[in-house]
Length: 269
Image 1 (cartoon, rainbow, N blue to C red):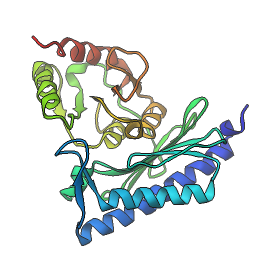
Image 2 (spheres, one colour):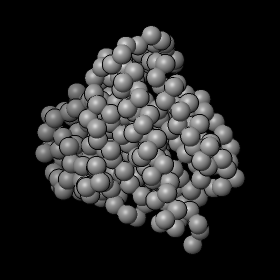
Image 3 (cartoon, rainbow, N blue to C red):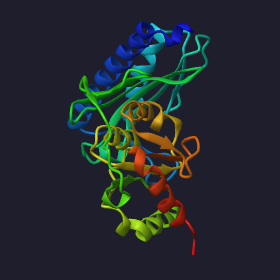
Image 4 (cartoon, rainbow, N blue to C red):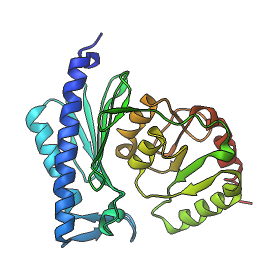
């Protein structure tokens, strides 16, 4: 067994994840309450970045580099360091920047660690709610240190389903038309605006399912592990291996049902 699979080693990584996510998140929340001074756009006019996205990533990356200089790091706001330890950190300093911009509570700090066997540790902290979701591979999923489980919903018509929309206006139009085709076949639809939170909400039973496309690695790096450890099933829309390009996570028994709805509703006719 490799060192990175040793529980004490993984738990050491977890403590770093939780500490940095909470500290970075609380600092960003305090800064947001004091007011924003730098708001810019990235890929489109609706893809926002603030000074706190960059400051939070800088803080987290600096701490990881100090504590574990041999690890690799990938960050949404440009952090990129190669490593030799076999551990890779994936950081989303503020997931849900538009919510953050509007002082809505639905934004998080997400930090995940992976090794050669895949996701190993994940922490997602929601500062406005003071909620910390975490998981270590093979050890279950937790919210504020209480173990959580996904729902046992078995009928997609009774499922509360969450999704997200692209920063591209044209893609949003296509995605909204798809939703209109099957919204009457599920309990209802939600759209909160932060993938990591949506996935964690499936893990703790606040949602029955979530799907989205054209995400990024840092959107799902921590939260997917948390959902899997809660008992949820993840994959792409057709049930294959999940990826940022196509991501779905549900209560296990409704995955195939939702998959059929999404795929059949994705035609352009």
